[in-house]
Length: 221
Image (cartoon, rainbow, N blue to C red; front, side, top):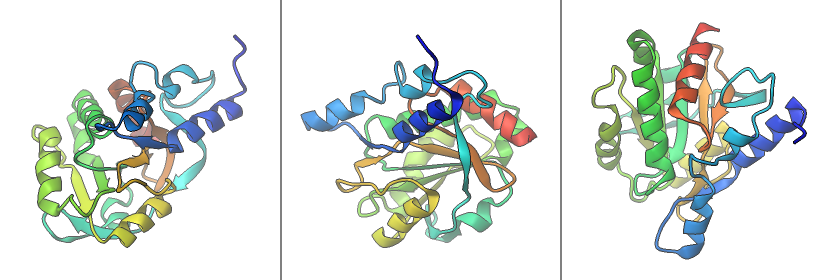
């Protein structure tokens, strides 16, 4: 098989990652859409070309660290740009009742943080912004994320707020707006470095090992 040029591969991967992903439910159409994000055959695992710098999706045009303020699981205001500036940061948009993509992504992040040096893991900020603020209260987010970070040296941050602010946060991060009351959302996990730019992102085709390796690379840059 002919391997596409690196730029074309990156474009294909980013297009796949930015697409909205339906989390599974009782609806047959949503379940079928979710199947395309199984870790066993995700696009990022099969289309990666030679010469790429990262195991994840290389972003030829880096994403700038976005600026937005939402409410964290303690009920306090959380200024994303100020709280995470200069630190390795993983940003994901999803919702707590998601049965597949969201918990799998958070579990992969937790596994990756257990795989890197504890000193690095302690520096990493993991931020989960709900796409379903009508149901994901600060308390719900806190209880949900505690399932993943209980034994880690860093605590995952859950954010919620008014729908308009959540929508603006997605747009400022460069991901498409979630649809269907938040159940149809981007599966993109963005990794920002000390330069406040994301040069790499992950999708369902990536593994915890991919995330761990790229975290180390970004932290060392």
